[in-house]
Length: 100
Image (cartoon, rainbow, N blue to C red; front, side):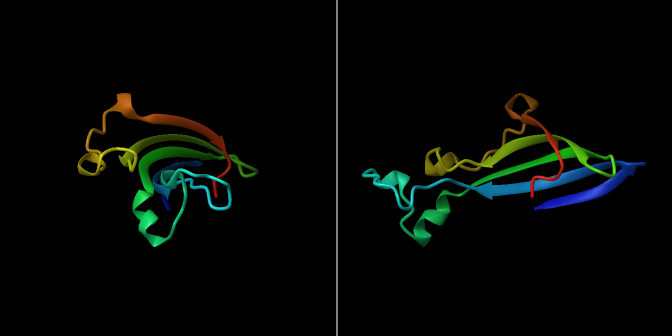
């Protein structure tokens, strides 16, 4: 989900939330931790949040994004929600056009 808003001219800002994970469904995987076995596995969805800039060239959009891990299902249950939003923990992305 992304909320976009105008800044100056063709420059726009954005706040976003991204959620997902990767599981094996039809593969011959023997380790149950890597398989999607039903609704109980939905608790293993990771969540990332962030903000970015968008410049609209009319025929494509140039994006600069900064994302942070918000919910990390690979950590122990008690420390999955992240609260350390330091710039040193951020992931920076450059993109052309919208990701969806």
